[in-house]
Image (cartoon, rainbow, N blue to C red):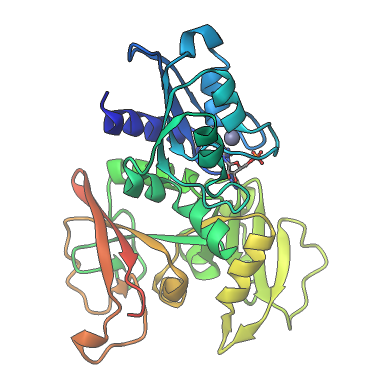
Length: 352
Ligand code: AOF
Ligand code: ZN
């Protein structure tokens, strides 16, 4: 049996949980009988509901699974949480071999699931497509390891790195295929974070279940902006100013301000405490630049256009490097085409 192909299948199933399982991991599972026939598949669908392994096994009669193989992208759990331990159910179903993508980083599980299976005489194959499985659950890993919100950032630029012309015109840099991919990316994150400047300049709807606006002086309260039509809106503002009494359109949070900027470390910490375990920043060069030190991942769409204007707006107003060896460095994880545009996905290299 080709485990890598089965693991890819698990990853695809797991992705069906995007938008519904946070703060839990994305998990998919497939089951084969003793002859190697695929007999079931499952995934974690909703926070608090069955784990992927339980979802896949409960569709079967234990007679069918005796001597079979179960493939799952995350180590089966060993604890009583919202549901009983998946490892126990796997043992009850007479599975002979369990193939795992990565060990669980949740300290309650962390190897205990594997031990439970091995103690019951089950063969455990570890680390199949481990890198892919870790990328799939990079948010869960950061949450568990550092109790911090995962910060992603999306930008769309011309070939010469501009997000708008000098007068602010930005519609449209990328075309339909790229823009529908953005909707898919947004759904992967618990919230979209933007700035008052972007709200005022573009009046975007940024449709999402949770939108966060950094608005130091509460400027967005002076207009009628579409972003406020979303389900949940959180606004961070300067703690030294007074909130107008009639402000009921959002949750308002007082934040410390330094050098005329809302303290982003405070913002991300507060979001984590509010249960927002991942955010996607969609803003202009100013917020993008300030957020870069906190950013875990960048989605950078590039349109095959040259603005050719030095005074066009750049995607990152970051600390100015006087020499190339002072640049902040990244590694490119993938390059995908959304014709006629491309999407580069990159991660920061530490200490640069
Ligand atoms: C999931 N889905 O398919 C697997 C998980 O609160 P609970 O009971 O849902 O448990 C959540 C933990 O269970 C989670 O942090 C992870 O360690 C483990 N495995 N979780 O949500 C799954 N297999
Ligand atoms: Zn479980």
